[in-house]
Image (cartoon, rainbow, N blue to C red; front, side):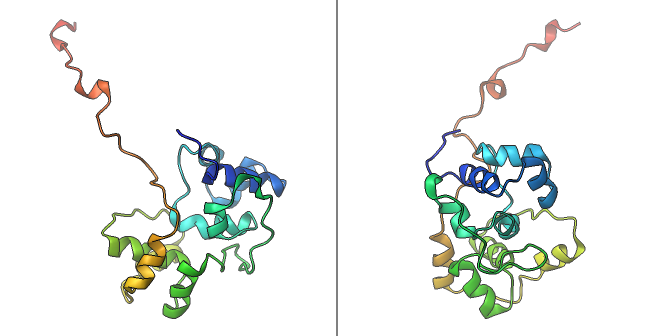
Length: 179
């Protein structure tokens, strides 16, 4: 995959190393496998959007800085305010502004944005509380200005579907010769 100068993966790796954390330790704290962290750092896959505030808090930065900081920027320092459970409360004004107005979390704002955009989401969690929080997004609506602010955030798809199917999909198989 094309590595960009400001890749999310490079930022995760740089910030993790600056905190003296191994991939295994970050994976443990995030509740994912070390292979998942490796894939994030190599820009093969990306963290689930709902986990970005926690990841940013563990790496001592904000979600905005995690998504946009240049590779040579060095550690961002601790997030301005992080909860005792490690969730970031400074996920950037595009997310924290609406979160404060509606009494929601930044993750709930992101999920609501997806809903209003017509995107299909599959929030991943094993926590009953997070499951309840993920469902608690139907009692508010983001304004056009709030939607535009979230749309202005740097975004990359979790998975890119190629324009053309891979060759194995279009190859005609002759099964008549099988024994």
